[in-house]
Image (cartoon, rainbow, N blue to C red):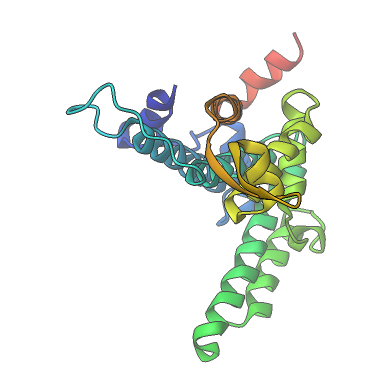
Length: 256
């Protein structure tokens, strides 16, 4: 499955782009130059890149030691979180049935990019930053030109919103997917609740109710979470392909 994903993100022949006359292309016209198809494609590329990293980290050296597998205690949770977040981001961008909402979300992504890049650049040299207000005004202007609310086009994005939406879009599983995301995030940050929940552990040096814990990877937990993340990535690709059909084909499918 990961190889299939990778083949779609690593070749010019299969590059993720909006085809002329498709729903994606018409969406992009309204949010131009901040294309929702670009934002969704970028999220998918990043998701697959992290899945490939997990695979390479686990496989070790397929050509020289094909039977060797290596498991880290914490790093795979960081990679799974990034894969999940980005797959959910693509679904959040492409999922709404209404074009107006899809366009708004593409513009919100750009407004979020403006806010984050502005905050980062100011830490290095505030004099090099193009005025944030000017960049936000551009996003609002595009929203107005598309007949959309300028205020809604620059509303902040929270990953809890993105992940919850994706889970509910897939199968009314918003809380379940948010739990996976929070667990991976907690483990990536080294939070005790997540680390102790996701790993195999053995208590050492127990004294007065306190112990040192030796942690090792939990293969069942890793396989379970990885398989669910891969399913979400697959759903995101399927949604991209669905929106990348000619408008008349989708209208026909939705009315039969």
